[in-house]
Image 1 (cartoon, rainbow, N blue to C red):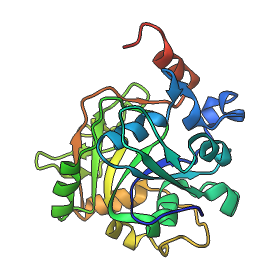
Image 2: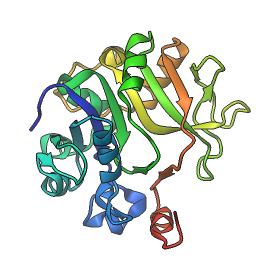
Image 3: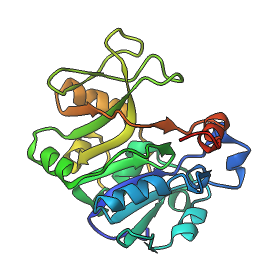
Length: 249
């Protein structure tokens, strides 16, 4: 892996994007253009705007396209220089490691507290702040999630949220399950201690994140808040087209 230590943020970019085919047959989903730039560039720039300039990107499908596109250092107008490192799961293991498996693979190279955001989600109003990191660092929680009101494509929701800010492990479709996980989150390394994989995931085991989150919610270790801004999970060509429509603001 081409990595540095203590990355402040991880951008997830390893998915195949099956539902986006044929667009993703030759272009990784996070590189599909949204409003004049690569989809994953939106969260990368937002992170940089907040001062989080050491970013780690995991790849699998057409991973070299992503590292060729950004290189090891990115300079965008009016933003600080961003150092980018890569965890090439496809090159190392021949397949993507799913969300938790990919994070654990990169864990030795991440800071003690780090952001995770999906490279295929468009959330242009989200602000990454040092204050959010400091609040989370001082709390007993091991993960802090940003939730959005359930979109039309996920009416059953993912989780609930208590009045005290605890994220609740509820069944999809439950009456008090009005929120969908935005993918934006803060984690402490300790969150992954109980996942059953050693840091670095040397065997390349694929592991889903949702069961780990739900188990931690049951232990009262996951807090959250609602993100009220624009948010699109770019999961279909239709949603991509809507974002790029001329009359969309």
